[in-house]
Length: 342
Ligand code: NAD
Ligand code: ZN
Image 1: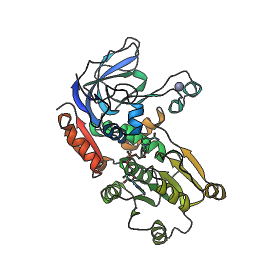
Image 2 (image 1 turned 30 degrees about the vertical axis):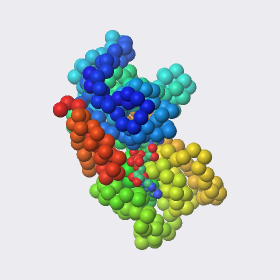
Image 3 (image 1 turned 90 degrees about the horizontal axis):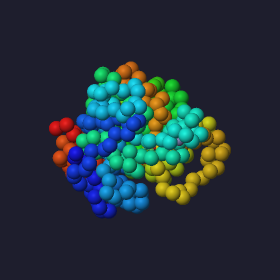
Image 4 (image 1 turned 90 degrees about the vertical axis):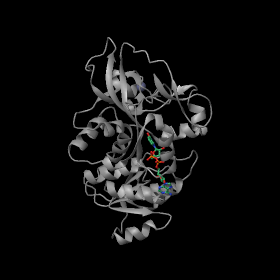
């Protein structure tokens, strides 16, 4: 079968031929229809420090996808051939304390599809049936292919009550833009989003942010004054991974504010802890998606009118994967879809 693989420890990926995966007793085999390119895949493409320490070579990567079940292991229940599915990319152990308590997103022994084990950028993917998630008919293939990052946005945005709250999102990448849409959908008042990239801020505005701020050109306190937000933000979502963005969030939070942290900050970055203490801030780290509560909420939000379609900005056939990665690398995109059926 075709697969997009890292064949040697260097920049890029190669469309190559690999063995079709073997389907274990508890697995389903998914024929991939569409995949999307994640920021993680960009790290892998660039072969940065993290990627070179993490990704085994050779291996094919990718973890954002939709496809159809074509084979089922003999122990599998609840799925049928022909089911349209996406899947949770974190394969969990099932026996650690958190797994047994139903908090699978906190498993200590997680292995990642397309990171620690072969991925979804291929004609076929085998995963444990536990990780597959059936997609209802009224959800398009394009949206189903981005349930993984949509899940990061939903897990973060739903970490704290947003009804009537003033929300600050730092980072208008695809996940920040989707979080803005969710915040509006669930009833936030001001949804202010920052970035340094105007293309992405425009996208976040289309998705429902009430005010976008290019922090290279405008000051966040000035914008807050314009919005009559004298007291600061009630809820923050850090979605940039940039230290200065998180520092300015700490400055602009109201007392008692709550922050959900998704962006991956550089190791060892220090903050002024007195801001956390004297403001009584609550900070929650967010990893992955809740299995499978976040997934059910994603479907429910789409079915109750959440519109994420603007975040999908580009489509390519998988044979044009280089153009797809170039588009992501340019920063002038939302989500980029690679079509495997064409
Ligand atoms: P992305 O890189 O596409 O988006 C980050 C955005 O931050 C970019 O648009 C960038 O221009 C912007 N930015 C740069 N400097 C800024 C500044 N000073 N202020 C505000 N914004 C600034 O990433 P993404 O795919 O949208 O993911 C968002 C973050 O979440 C990344 O840090 C990613 O690594 C992280 N992530 C974490 C998890 C998890 O499980 N914790 C999962 C997925 C992604
Ligand atoms: Zn576990």
